[in-house]
Amino acid sequence: MSIEGSQTTQLSMQGQTHRISLLSLAAVIGAATIFGLTYSLTAPLVALNLAERGMGETLIGLNAAMHAVGVLMIAPALPWLAGRLGAQPLILAALLMTAALLLLFPAIPIVWMWFLLRVGLGVGAEILFVLTESWANDLSDDATRGRIMATYTAMLSLGFAGGPLILSVTGTEGVLPFAVGAGAALLALLLVSAPGIIKPPMQAHGQGSLLRFMRLAPVAMSTTALNAAVETAGLSFMALYAVRLGWEEQAGTQLITTLMVGAILLQLPIGWLCDKMDRRKLMIWLGVLCTLGAVAWPFMLRTPWVAYPALFLWGGLFVGIYTTMLAIVGSRFRGTELVGVYAAMGLLWGGGALIGPSLTGLALDVAQHGLPIFVALACGSFTLALLLSRSLSSRQEAAA
Image 1: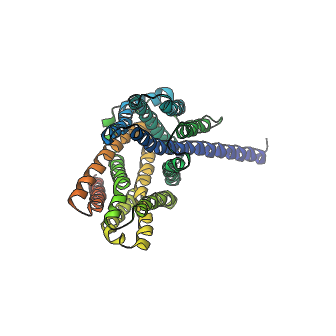
Image 2 (image 1 turned 135 degrees about the vertical axis):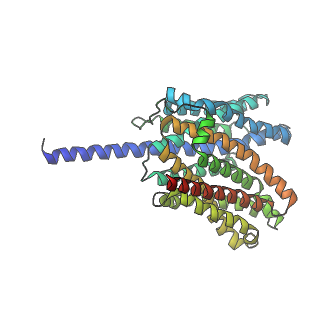
């Protein structure tokens, strides 16, 4: 074969590999987007249905907590399962289970059984969340990881925003909203099972307890706890805080939407920065800006034309911390070790989501500006810890 013919064959093979890689990435990110959609659709849908059946807020809250029970049940075993079975079969099983469970909700009139169904949804959600993140990281290299994980985060946020939108169309009564959620899960199943997509390697190495993975990636753990605490506190109390400052309730809700839109649209430029500069330094700058921004909330929210663009920017910068952390973790870990780190992050997410609203509610009882006080302290403490760890690492390297 001539040199020209060999080069043409090589280019053709490279082009085919690139197309397969893009197809695989689209399938995984598409599955993550639909996971976000089904999660954000299910949470308010189940709560509203339980309220219609006469359950009080305490029992509705306990039902929501069953999701975390499912996460805690599957997270310790997830690295081992991924090493034995592989990521793709586990994701397919989780999607099929999610679709079946959603259809069981309207089919089972005994609402106490909904607690067990919610545990199952938590198991499925943890599998999808951990393994789609791991898979997306495996499909990237260090030169593109920031942009790929930014796309992943943006599309996941888009999915979270889509659930309530679907409910506004389908309503919350009857089988239809549950069936739409189940149909979305089956659509994701088709994407992940498409022929020819690249399966991530999941060799059975790096096994260990979740405590070991927490020690291996302390920045990832603290970033996850921060993101969960602030995100859940903001979703729970932003509208209430705005009403305290004189906003109408509907306008206060629109502030939450503004934060989410910023979280979606600003991830790609932040991902581009991830691939162009030192990622830990970028996290520190984002943390400083988010701390200062939270301090300024009481002043910015006095004027709507200042509040909306400022919160749009703040939402993007804050979620950018999580996006940057995903790029850092993906550059350090592979295979089942990466799954183990993500599984440990799932536990920290649950802890942050529990502590954030609790502390914010206490802060709002004590002070009018309790929400920005909590957010500023959380972001500031996180940034200070990053600065101290960076300084310690620099001194250790100099001593070596």
